[in-house]
Image (tube, rainbow, N blue to C red; front, side, top):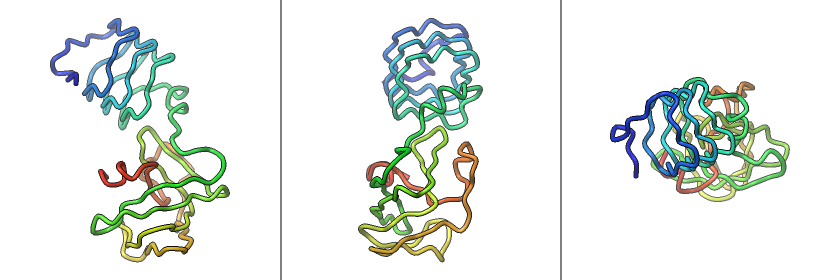
Length: 175
């Protein structure tokens, strides 16, 4: 695993086709860096400066871009996590570390910003029961449909209104 503290990453660095899987690049200054076709899967790019970085054809699957500075909208849009059509299975963490298995119906609005944390305006509980971490009034019970009390339209507001979930059980457990 690469740690940015061990690397001298200067602006305009040539990281073309670099293998940076799982690299800790949090806070790194990657402004102007050539990251064309770089493998950045699961890399920690939180608070990294990506101003003018060439991220064309870079693999950013699972990369954490929370707070990344100057990430181009085109790249960020490519990172939309939940399926944009149809229903799908998702997982939510509730109080007491309870993991709830959900189905996000086809008609639900869904969103993600720059991390794997997602939101929907309604879900149906498939398995498990629990109470929301964020309030004591939202209860998740098998078979029930849960609707959020307010929906944030701006996808870039990651912790905005909606029912928060992850695509995998492991991600929900790690929340």
